[in-house]
Length: 338
Image (tube, rainbow, N blue to C red; front, side, top):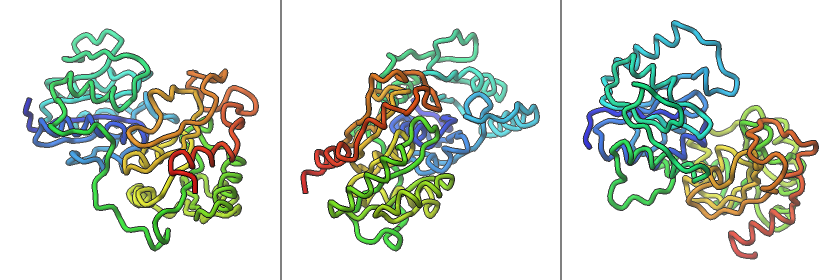
């Protein structure tokens, strides 16, 4: 299939967008231009995906964790922007618990002639391709399967791994020489973040082992990162863009993180990840993909598959049961004992 312009949409966070990379490359192989519709939390990552020519940003009221009120003028403004693209087709990428149908309706209003999405709900006339997938498969494979069903098979030699555009910004002025360990604090949902006490003990243990340790996180984690870094690390929180963070991770020996976007960014640059993974969503779908990884945390804990943003079990035992020794063992398994 060959189209002039194809819209690809994934409206949530950085990690979700990065996981869509293989699907985007498949669409780009069959299109002259790919426009990516992203949410505010994913737009920077969307601009880094090979195959993306333009990024549109819109905050969808049915996707965001803190959704905006539905604003008629804002919605109609999006329809006008989409109409102006002259898109020949759209591929709507969603997680298993999200519906593609609200956006499909807006795309029909914008005159997009062919719309494809995964949908368990009856789509009426909203979808031309209604794709079904097995639950629990890796999210990157789930999205790639939709691209194929929509008529965009992967190009020859496609690896299916995550990737970002290169060259990356040079951050050696912040980090020093390559080969350090990175500990990332924070996540979009508190239930999925690396517990601060464990993060601090991990920084101390890695430093004692002889690693230089960098601590990263979002601007909202500045206080936590400062306390964690005080145990033997260097605080980089708030000092990097997404592209700069990709370079920091690219030159790291290993990343230790919760289930958060930077874990997928590490996978996109091929850096091994020790993933402290709360089972509120399945690791089979959401663990870092296509890079060496060790998943830690009780995957059978009572919070499993709840999708809870805040841990529903007192004490957060799925992750607080993990020790810094467990983390060091996982690092050794990934890198070889030092």
